Length: 312
Image (cartoon, rainbow, N blue to C red; front, side, top):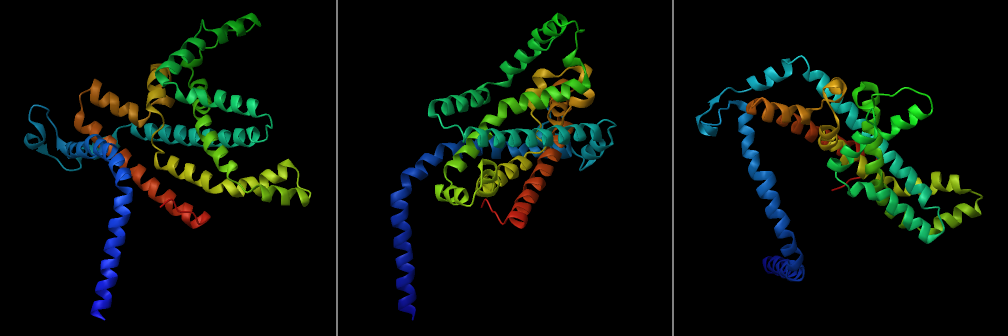
């Protein structure tokens, strides 16, 4: 019995060694990103201790006084912090719904284009904005939607009055969502198109035999088949539900629309760089990270509970 167990154990070790000898180039390829992840993501996490200190840069981590949760208490007592969290959640959820929803819609529409050249051209045109930085796009939209921009020029030519789009709270929130959807839906569209391409053509043939048209094929064949991809994107997006798009908002917003556009990330930036309140900004960042971790765990649970789908 002992000799049999020993042979099984030795066999497993040889099999593991054989697998590693075949896969070592892949492990070697993974080494640079793992090192970068350690340097830029894990080692800086030591700075979390600042959130629990009365941090003074000249004294450093070890010289600053430990004050426990006082930074968090002060943060939650700020009169505008609740509105900032609400703005963040509202903008983030609206972006998730529209970007994934329109990405799915355009994937369904483009998958029906029979002409290969037009199909590829449509994909390229819709995906192209995703590669452009918000630093560029944000300034383009600021110029186009300014009081003397092209949009107001058209409005004036039609006999209307100029609209201060970037200084109106109602318009600005809509512009944020619209421009983000236009930029990001191409990425989601490509993922859905890849999932659609993997559907067994026999399912569509069977649906045609049963008399299903294009709409019913999309509802009863395409949608159930790509549901795991939809769940994957929604799950990953919910994990970053407090990431409402710092780069976009920071480039485009101003003091006139701060009531509806200030989010946690821009607030942290102001606390840290403008007010030099490093401990308070770290506490706000840690709060955001903890909430994001909880949301990600909850989304994984719901994906498994409601759709019987697990990422890991």
